[in-house]
Image (cartoon, rainbow, N blue to C red; front, side, top):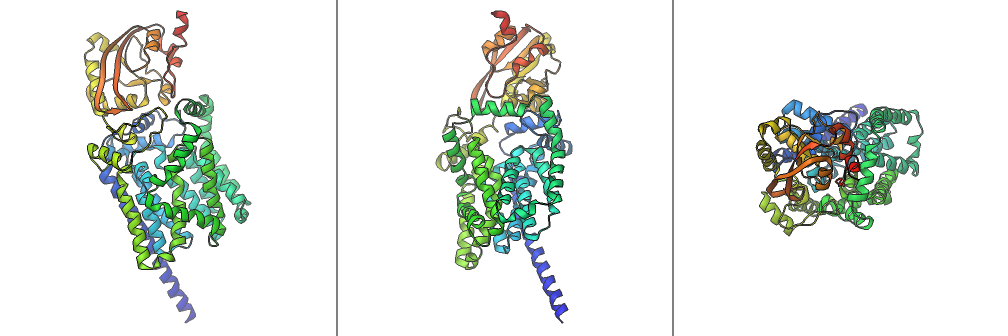
Length: 535
């Protein structure tokens, strides 16, 4: 009879766990549907042009870092073409799995169905995740990768199954092929574990094997960076010098924006999660996770990280906060109030992260509710335009059409020889993707990764330059004439007008002067190769 009782108990437990997992899958599917119904709005995000172009030049690295997102862009286009739905499919799927994993962490920490549901809903309605999982960027996959690493660490601490370090090493290796910033999270986790009683899980052969696997997976990217002169470090140095905000302003943005982009209604939840790890008796075995959050915050304050750099770490706090609050939420009044606060606030701030409003309505909404600050210290708030992260999704079709009109006005002889020189990767990528119906040639650019893809064998005798410094162009070509201006209703890249110059008769062969075109943030104003000839 005892055996039968135990068997019945185990079956009941398995049934409950299966039911909980089905609920989490349902919430993940709801997240997926949100993106499927909204992610074809507005237009391509600037970085999506870039990653699609990088997908046509697949290597083990590119200027800002790692090969995973360009590979995903290439796979998306191979599977389903160039549509917005195709390009944004995998970010949406990553978002759905992030929701599921958030609930699984709550379950791993001892949370019941209520805690799992609460934490998963918090992950659904965080505006930061809504936007990250709308567009194809490296950042779309960070929450999933960080959360998977955290889930494995929690499970190792709880069960002692140190063999899971091998899986964690593989996930870390994938994470490093996605974006270098996961290294900060890995370092913070290991540091947190070492200085807490959980340190015993570090001293075994499995974690050594884990580190070896991650290093092996990451080595080709490091070798690419070495072979190309560490463009990632050059990019970061220029970003800090020319483009990022000052230390105090950057630190304030980093901390203050967390309260909006995680959803104001979820702030008490993730603050309780931080307390769970650092202060509660139940969270004592998992203190390392709380210290990890504080260490990562310190890292990004020190290095002037942008406010979205912290987004990937919140699922572990959502889960812990829900577990801490679950006993109190057993009372119906508290339970329904907490869900109403979380979902109600999420709906109010939904348009911050999800493109669900017509542009004119979005502008009125952002002026009345919340206008996200720009990332760059040079951008100025403009109440007549959409928020910066939506603004750079607007106007690309119109811009390329006007570029095509300038190209078609060239003489047949010039058109046969002409190339398009773009001075930013977004315009270059837009021409490459949207220019085919107009028979536009592919663009070249010295901006970030485009520089490493070279000159496409253009002679340089005839070039249409999309913007650029006039002094630089005159030092490079014998003839420079302004022939058109790109205008559109909603500015792209914060520029409502972009001059187009017809440049002819390059002074030196284009491959020879190409190094002078290279830049990351500060547009070159002098050609250090041909400019010497004029002194």
